[in-house]
Length: 367
Ligand SMILES: Nc1ncnc2c1ncn2[C@@H]1O[C@H](COP(=O)(O)OP(=O)(O)O)[C@@H](O)[C@H]1O
Ligand SMILES: [Mg+2]
Image (cartoon, rainbow, N blue to C red):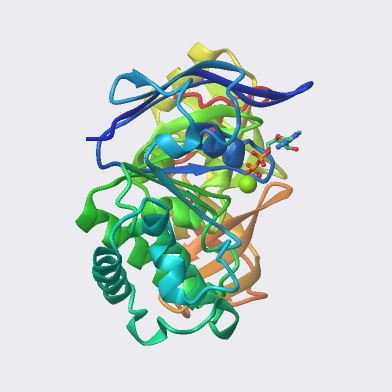
């Protein structure tokens, strides 16, 4: 069992509030990803949980017991860092076995554990090498193995894949997740990479300026961002944000993007905006919210706009077309070969039921 509870956790460095009034309940066996831009307090929060930084306020509880007065080495957590932090003068086997040796575990048992972990991480053939004779990916495996061998209650990861090349990162993120699924060890994983957050997390915690913006499953965060920060931070290609003014009429309302381009909103959405009492909104459009109009010669039912195609990016399975809506650009996800850079006056359809509407000043979602 390893349930972690954070209650009003704060961490200040002088005048810098690195973590502010943070509440979080992590279930036993859960894989939680803390994500946010550089400097938002991710590492600080992880270090506070590990006990490497003293807490400035609040409580951290492991299975209901306060950790505030518990020394880092007694918290039964193992941390994996971005820079691996291996002992350069020790072999892979010695690096792996070091934590057990410090605990006076008998030699034979250490050897058995090292063999087992090396097999799990495919390090069997490298046990006698020193870290300098390993590739970046192999070093990261050893760092992972050092955490695994301790069989801790909680794994803490601080951007463990950031030093690896893109291809290796994709492979390693799956391996880490597969290992965690089989071990069922409660894990907290820090990254600035929203794709890692989306692909790895049971639940994502989005942080900004030391504050939680949203906590939810990857799908919840992607489909129902609470504000424009979360909406634009999560997702690839990024959500386009376009200012629009509201034009109310008898049947409902339209979004006016300027330059003669308008999109009609369904009744319920128009009503939600009326309740919010705003005259302008930020419209959040994901690439899949804009498609090529299937009936290019048909009448405009209000969800269609015309645009030149500024650029097409091929992604293989689909293409991203950059289009103009009002004075801004937005991205549309289209079939490969369906759009070409430089084409003029193509018709696009907006998914008016799915697009996001945000408050123009606060950025809060208006739904
Ligand atoms: N030891 C420290 N002393 C002073 N300020 C710090 C210290 N560690 C972190 N900070 C500040 O706290 C904020 C959060 O930092 P950090 O947790 O490292 O961010 P992240 O890991 O999300 O990039 C930053 O403004 C950083 O400058
Ligand atoms: Mg950091």
